[in-house]
Image (cartoon, rainbow, N blue to C red; front, top):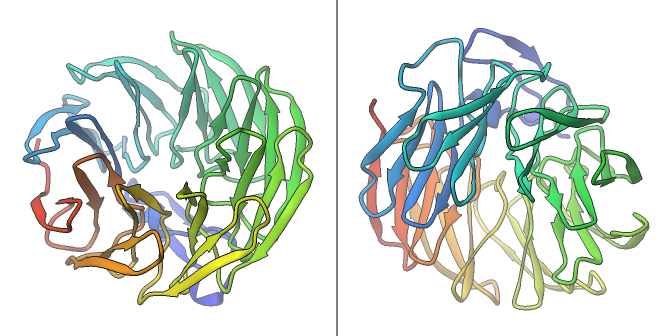
Length: 352
């Protein structure tokens, strides 16, 4: 990782972390976690988790009812049909009723905080923690098992009917059984910050690292099918659409690859540094730059539109059939929503 990206960060709760050269810092320093689901936007930021109306930005509820300086949220919320799951920097992981905003339970057995987004399947939630453990938690908040890696977990796991796939900052991608046992591991050139992505048929896993490498792995064995070298670090999650893989690096390059062979279809340069991943919209893809610019491209890599915001962005835009929503820091407002043509619909800084 380049020296310019080696950061010494002060967490808002007062905890000072001296991070190694393989750990990106902006998401810890205060970047909001944003998820859109149906008619609602969920924002995890500082002392609260908010549910906003997607059409207006109005606050419907916030969790908890009373904020505490001991509890800080930055993790991207996981939203299911009935619940919202989110972790905090006090080492707690919460299940919240999606209609009322009331807490259902809190899991407190982690020895590290939660930055990565959780995943859920068959009433089991898989929560990645900064202590290097992936925690499998049942619907009542009880620990089923934990899987230990060698470094921080900031990426969302991929969960299938047969296995769990996980990227770690220990430079590895793991295949894990549903009972928490390692099936295989694959060593990358750098820390895996973005979430791995499954192929449509589930036989191939795609993952990138801040060591510039991007690989396709056999999901059954973990063996490499192909490897692609980007020009700079890959921090975000790729996207698969239009029979192509789309990924971006922090040097301002957008790539499209053949998912079967890894051959490059095209490469487009853009201004800025993409720390978040790629989001798919109707007829195109979007990303956001650290410098506060939201960009949309068609599927051939040509620019459709861009919007410049006052602030910095460290997460890919949250996309639905109608809206793109981004969270910013150090700017005028915290959350901005656009329609898919790039017209801003609203912006807000939620109040309690």
